[in-house]
Amino acid sequence: MSSDLYTVVDGEPMIGPKGMSLLLGVPLRDIFAESKRSNGEHFTLPAEWIKSGRRRSKEYQAATGQTDMLGALEYWQAKEQERM
Image 1 (tube, rainbow, N blue to C red):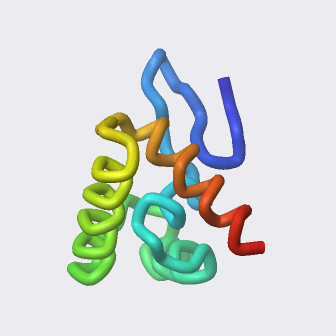
Image 2: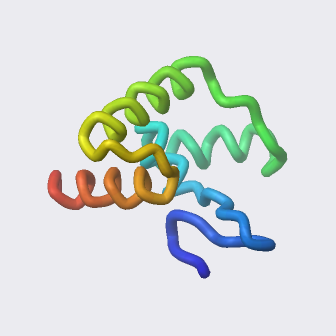
């Protein structure tokens, strides 16, 4: 299974840049810029991104009673589409 948010590799979801942007509440351009700075290697998330991701996780949990990552991706994608 694959989408613009994540891909499943060996049965495990791997979050893509757009998915990371949604989960963390960080602009996609910032995700790409950080990836470019790290030459595409794994990079450490900035502390403010982690805080934002935790806040968004709590908001998702409060709104839905769920804790799953894929559900959170769908939730934040729907919220983004509502804004447009």
